[in-house]
Image 1 (cartoon, rainbow, N blue to C red):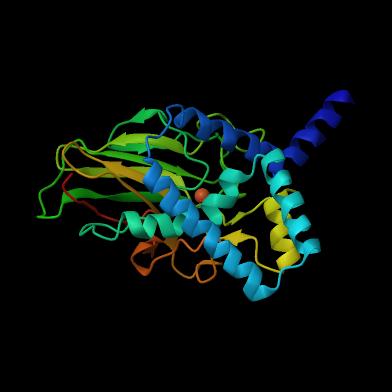
Image 2 (cartoon, helix red, strand yellow):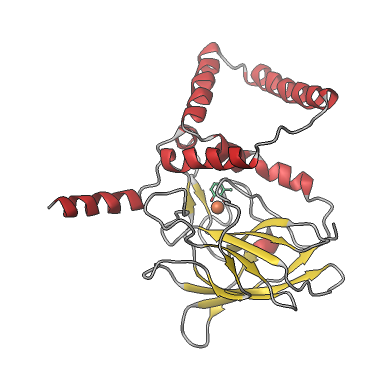
Length: 291
Ligand code: MBD
Ligand code: FE
């Protein structure tokens, strides 16, 4: 009886994305990566902070923001921190413009935002590999294959392809309970010609947790809480600029209205059924700019 109850609780946990589960670890992951203080000059801090505050002052005048609304904002910002949702908030509503500025001068593959759910040092895998997954991993099998090249077409042998994505229920390992640590996360080393063949499963669309501060903003504003199904990638090779990007699926839900504004036409895949009937396959080649 106790076992049945535990099982029921597990099932419940695995099917509900709670802000506390994803938010706390997203904050911890970010803090681990951001240990060292960033050196920014006084001039630069003053320039950017003054511009940001001035833009906000203009919104208050333009929209005639009231004290009631100002206090609602203050309460909400305090709660965002308590929920651990600053990484989620910033990556959903701000990062896409930072990415646009950072990658404007690239000639190679298009980038996209990293989001809050990257974890470094995922298990190392060879060029032909299956991403770590459960024995009964749900979802349509997907073979993701391609080649990493330089802008002049030279194959980049031994390139590193880091891939992470949500499962068939839209949850990420390490950011939702009940999923094995490295599920659907891997660091693949391409072969001597920069090629890779990765077996995984089709991810589901991702819904922003509805019980946290980001969810409350979305609800209060009447927005959609969804991101289209996507693969996250970091692709790198010595002497070349690492690219962080995402790939989406043609015809998928929310491709045209991503809450994180991170879809670009060049990043939409069109998988086709495999000849052996074992799911789908898709080819995508990466082109890395010189460092
Ligand atoms: C995600 O899965 C994601 O990729 C981004 C950018 C924001 C929230 C959840
Ligand atoms: Fe994501």
